[in-house]
Image (tube, rainbow, N blue to C red; front, side, top):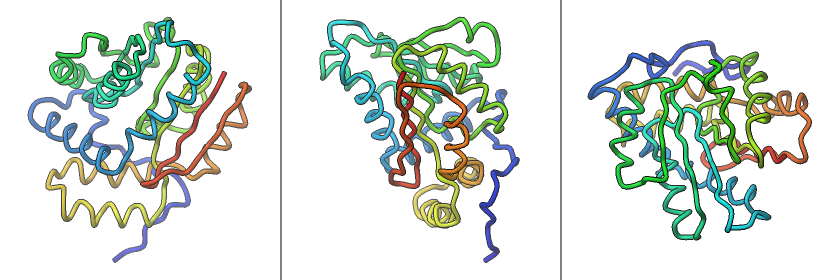
Length: 237
């Protein structure tokens, strides 16, 4: 078994980075990635961050939350369920550059009228003009280069009223090997398996995130390690 280098983030692209990917392959891969995230507790990390940002906010006011790189909308549906249970009035927005992904998300979110989806490139003017109370970036930040991440974080800060919740992967050989073993038992989808491993190598060390965090001025921010091999970065304005 060859040794995996995790010293630097890999530049290798993922199959899911192709915004023309569509059909059964796309739908099955999104479903499998969604299940992996649920099984490994990933959605809880994002929801916990939202709770922290809303801790001092009155429930009587509507809250607008956007998820960048929303995929099939899984996390937004979880947030919608939580909002209904906790009596929040939520306006939820899912943004993804792949229009076929948005079609799948809309179909799966038929019974969630509080969720709206848009196929938008976040580097275009259309996105820069949008504003939200909370911005989420769940398993999306690692898709960008370091220089792009610096600009995105600054943009997200300008666009959010309360703050940002980032939930992304730790880059480590242990995480890589455990994911290999996990896929051998539970995942047969080749795209999900390959992209999952590449995602880990595109993920972050805590020191990477601290470099980005040192370049922004906000009221409060915290980077925490979470199971399974995730970092939760909460930026509070």
